[in-house]
Image (cartoon, rainbow, N blue to C red):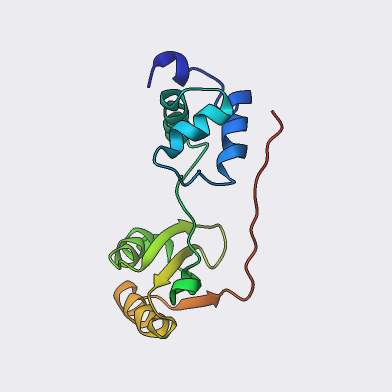
Length: 157
């Protein structure tokens, strides 16, 4: 990444246009970034550079597809637990050793550690959560999805 790109306002007009456009998806073509960049009036290299800069700056925390795992027969479950402050790092480490854990985050609440569980089959949820709870030494509360919402963030350029 060039220093000129890194020095730009992370949410300048071009970045806003990129974020807005890519939320709608990438074209299913041999060179999707080149086509997306062309539609934005920039080069593929510039688009990739801006995406890397937005990720590095923390403006974007993730760039990738969202899967509807239920259509493939699996299940996502939002889970929470209370991790005592003196054990927080150990609980996180224990939770993160399980490949079914997609990501975790801390919150300022009694239920201060949350994570997303992704399993291949819905019947795998209970046994995997039991293994995680035993390894972490905390009670895990599952919050299965009842309804799905798609929230997009569209920014004014």
